[in-house]
Each structure stands twice: as C-alpha cells, then as structure tokens.
Length: 276
Image: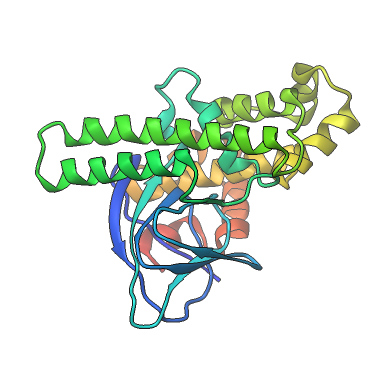
C-alpha cells in the first residue's frame, strides 16, 4: 500500500479519467473522493471488499481508506473523480454535516447504485461540471463548486435514506453525529475527549462506544487523522514552513506532528512535500 500524491491546487477538482486493467497496490490519499462511472464496468476494491461497478454507479472513498479500481480487459472504463478537502465546504452553512458520510466508516456502503435517483442526479451534475470546464466557461469554477455542494447533498440524502430503510446498520446516536460535525469544524483547535463527552450530553462509555461504532476510530485518533489530512493539504498546495503547518493543523509540538504524520503516511512531512 502506498500514499498517492494528488496535485490539487485548490480545495476541489473534477478530473476525467480512463481506467486500466493493470494490477496495482492499494493506495490511500488525504483527499475525499467521489467516483462517477460513465462508461464500461469496473471492480472497485476497498480494503478487503470488492464492488462491481456499472455505468452510473457512484463510489465514495473516505480519506486514508485503502482502495483501487480495475477495468475489465480491453474495456477501459471512463469516469470522473471528484476530489476535495474538508476546507471546500468551510464557508457553506452547515457544510461540515455534508462530510459525515465520508467519515462515518460504518453503516453506509461505498457504492451508490445507478438505479438510485441520487446516483442519477450526481451523474447529471458531474457531466454538467465537466462540460463547463471543457468549454472554457468563464464561470466554470463557480458552476463546479455549486455542483459539488449539490452532489454532497445527494450523498447525504442517500446515506440518510439507506439508514432509514434498514438497508444498513441502524443510525448512530444523533449526539455522536453532531460531535463529528463539531470536530470537523474545530479539529485545529485544542480538543479532548472529556470536553466532547460533556458537549454530547452522553455518558463517557456510551459516547466512546458509539463514536467508534460510527467512525471505526477513537475521538483522539479521528482528530489526529483530520489534522494530518489538513497538513497534507498545506504541504501539497502552499509554501508555508513545516513548523507553520504543524501549528496551523492543531499539533501542540513539531515532534508530535512529525510522529503522527509518519504514522499515517509512512514518511516525514518534508519527504511528503518533496515527493519521496
């Protein structure tokens, strides 16, 4: 498994791709990803699970989740990858809640089937965003941002519909989902488990159990993952020093930053910036 360097120069991008049947190692990256399959079929691997994709299917890839996609022999698939970071929705009222399905690691499958009205609308929005980009529309970036928010709303609605229908695990406690939204808004600030528990109004044991059920992580590990993700974004897109990035990402010391970054990425922040 390896960390893929994605050269985003802004907080989101719509990228047309052509798939390959070649075998690859699973990779992880710091961005959130939505894959919209347009032509031919593919196999999408998430960790130890395989999903067969058909045209119109939509795939959700969470940050730091090992994954890869494979085309059928002699039938390279065509798709659009929508890549974005949490900062893309920072200015949207309630925008952090749109990211909950990507961080709730349990309960919602990564494939939205083409038969879903949400997948159909996501495909339409994606094709319109790519069309605006290809024709050189002066407002292409604005149109793409509007499309991204609309797409995230459909993902959120699909997750809610799936949970309500009983096709996935029962929805977690609302207080825990609210806590995830709160962390997404405040992860660069000092946060600790006790303060999150008090804010949720739940008992400590129940809070930690529900949090791990929803995300697959402890609150501490979840916060560290978000801080590393933020740091990777800055290392890739800015000229700020490693010390400045460490501080901006919410780490209390440079040594803690280096240790946690290497634990998640397998390399130091400087190695990541230099493409090693």
